[in-house]
Length: 322
Image 1 (cartoon, rainbow, N blue to C red):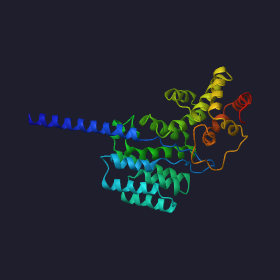
Image 2: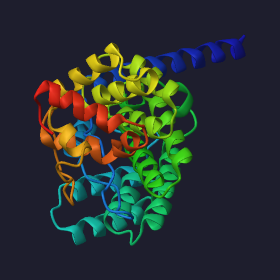
Image 3: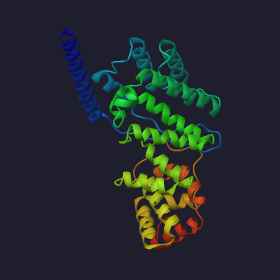
Image 4: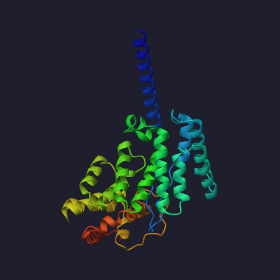
């Protein structure tokens, strides 16, 4: 009898813990903002990092909601050091804080990310650091998180360093020619967090088109029908042309894309050169967005027969920029 009562009390405690965890996830998800997506570098061998994420705000959310129950005092101290590093202007001090964080806790994924971005002498070394960062995040979160929290991963603040490390790893793998491995990481990131606060789908769909995985790219567009950024609208147009040629549907898709961002065609057609360094910020429909899109998507357009000629003819008819 006592054993049954003990088991019943245990189940009640577990149910309360699960309910509290869900409530915490909802609160954090409402308070989170989408992370600006990272993009690839231009020159061969250049580390593919450019856009910052709102980690300073994340530090405030962490203070408000706490980190994970699985986090030790050392883990918490290490993460605090990283939030200091994110706000530090001096590169040497940032690197020093990251190294200090790893001395405090080897499970600090953000520290590996910063060292990969700012201290790695080569992309190969960056990949090694990011692989360590992903492993660190997995240790910190524990196996239960990868079962019970799938679908709303970003809603828990403690998962975000891991998500950053894995997204950075995917980008470096792609830049180093390990395309299949990179795409696998992007798929997994979207499985863990379909809301995709990081914008991983924008990168994945461009890569899928470049690899000729048109069916999967189309499925991804269908999964996020409200997306209206350059990677989505131009990607849909290119996909339609690859499937149907110069059809009415393809022309309509391209015209809509040009209307969304008129700066893209000149860059795709080589009428305007891409800058040596990618802009740190971008806005919907602006030239910076066009630069970021073309920097990643140009290969897919180059590999599609007659795509450039088709684009040029539609721009001329629309009287747009080219």
